[in-house]
Image 1 (cartoon, rainbow, N blue to C red):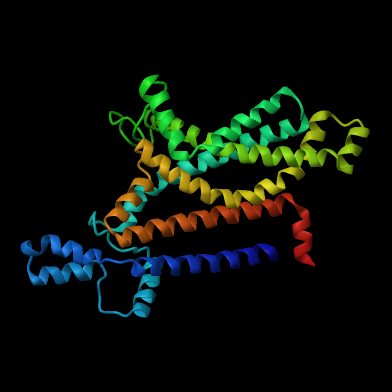
Image 2: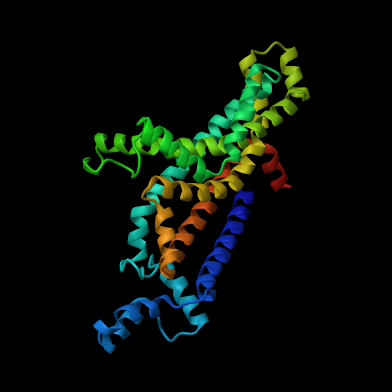
Length: 325
């Protein structure tokens, strides 16, 4: 329990640093998006309305320190400001977009981890067999950039062969809601983006697990289990449980890469996540929306890392013993 509290404190500190950087970066960038917006409509509004626009977007006369504490206070109240380009609260905009990205990233990460880990364990146990041919194939897909692989798959399997639906998250003829036609349609439209992300990230899990399994096969506890005549399945499970620990530790590092790749895949497939939202926010210097997106991405990655750390502690008793000393 003590080590979990320590890790939680570390993540809280990391989150505070990320929030501070998230606040500072837009203010260090050149340009004034509010002034640009006012410049476009200045001939159509009165000075009083211009002043109201400044206030509504947080353009006050506070100093940087005052703005920082105001930003922190508003953030804890769920107020991330108003999007300059969309004219709506950032919180409501993210509420519509974030679930799509989290679902896409979550499913892709879990599938690539489970499939890659299982395949790596089998490849390590049967090393030297014909199944080793999977390694060059998986490595090839990992070497191809996310967006390029997604584009090729979109054109080949979506536009040409029509095996998968393309562009969007669901058919516009389906009524959104918690009903099976809509849910199945969403799953159908997510298949190709998920497959492209899994193909691009599965090789790392496969190679890492394979190498660890080869190492574990020579350990004393595995040799003893084989000598006792334990069933093959139990021996493989015992070796795999120890071999998977480094993969779980690396899971926290891989999540950030998957997030960046998923944002690019969303742009290719016109998926309604935060990828296109972030691009438009950057192009239009929409600082409140940029800050909101980066804040959600940062906190999501930190939460996933914390879950991976807890899972590592649950699977490896040695970490709990070291923490108790």
